[in-house]
Image 1 (cartoon, rainbow, N blue to C red):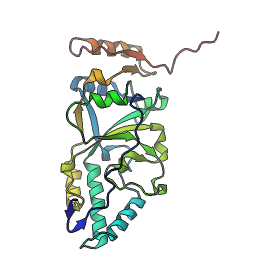
Image 2: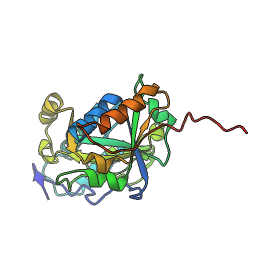
Image 3: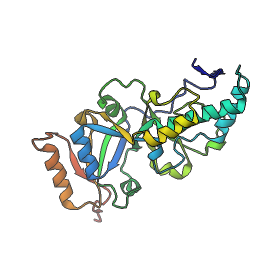
Image 4: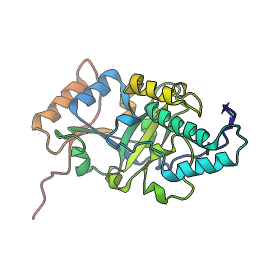
Length: 268
């Protein structure tokens, strides 16, 4: 078990894992046309740095976790003040926020009208549909340390025994975000975190120097089950997406269809 400044770090729930959907269940990623072209051209999924997200509480440990950390440290053989040790562990969580990269999907069997327009005044223009198994199988390279699962939407201050684990706060969000129904893949760069007692100065340097995100290589045809065009997109976008994916440059034989949200009702 790693130690620094005499702190015995038996304070973490190392075996904790987020809940998983069934491997065949559908997930969706909504994006604009530029993001779609970047995906098929670079053959990469974008993992954004956690502190760059809209929700400023992303990855922030709840107060109950801080209290639990302090309690565990008080019962651990340490040779520095408990307050200093607790602050060191909290600095580790802040450093973890700056060295954690996340790729997000909407977990649902159906399209979501809300997700088409979320966070973007222009709205999203394209959704790619896949399932959990295809997504994880499409990622190329050795990433055994990826953690993935469903986000739990809850008031974290009401959760008893909140897991003390560096990535656990990434999989909990406030109920006001429950419409997102997220499935997440989380990549942590352990090299950017100086142990569990990351000094405040290290956190400050990370805030200035950390990259905004990372791309992970994927097999695009293995990843995408189908491409769905936004219900408010112009009619030419569907034709353009078909032409782009099937041209000599990309040669992707992927199904493209219009959204079913604005289908014509059958009256008679």
